View 1 (cartoon, one colour):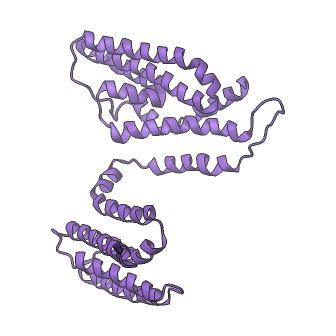
View 2: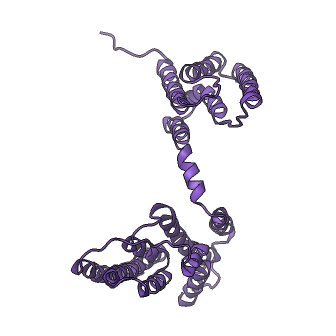
View 3: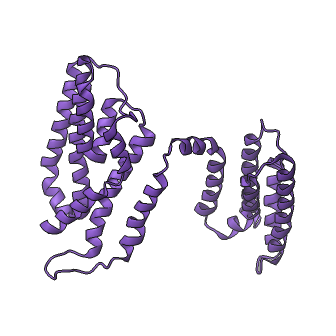
Length: 332
């Protein structure tokens, strides 16, 4: 009895058709309520994917047919884009780039591992559906966000790899790479906490702000909360006190993360006492919160607060990171 086997290439062509159809359906859904002229959606994208697969399949060795078909498709898409600009004043090229990627779906499925071409399809679908999300994110960002991101990328992915990982002093395990790594890690923790506080928990209550702010900068968080508590109603003071204790607890958590990265042996020795201090601080804060009647959670973000503005302007805490690096060298 012969075993049933699929014909060669059937799986590839089915995957190309399915992925191309999914991309086309996402394009149709995005343009259901638009009156703009489209060069095609689900059927067109499916045929584009099939067209690319056939041209690659007929001559897979030198890609000559595939390249020629790509040039023809690019010419047609360029004419469509020109007419779209001339008649409707639309300058978006997302659909055109998506169509060109769909044309390459055949070689992707045939030549690359499954995780790669599936990742390409996932990225296309996500980017197509997240247009409004990106618009909202851009509206929330201030003028210096990309400058801050560029600074972090500079210190973490340009300066750090360039430093030698060789000992400065023979008997001390210090290298320029490890010293700068200490700076990068502290800045990274501060930056990630800043992003969470700014974009994920923006406008959150005092309690959440104390937790996230403690990871970012416990000193700045407690200073801000203490100043704001002076003008707060008496029944709201337990909220601020709880947030301060939570910020202290998060400070111990941040220290444990840093210690674990640099010296696992020291981390194992300090794990119990520092965990106790973290739980004790958070426990006192939680007891204070539960003992008093929970009040309406207040907003932590106010643009007229000078110290909040200062904390926003220093998301990398680079001076603090340099001080930590200096102390790291000193104690080593």
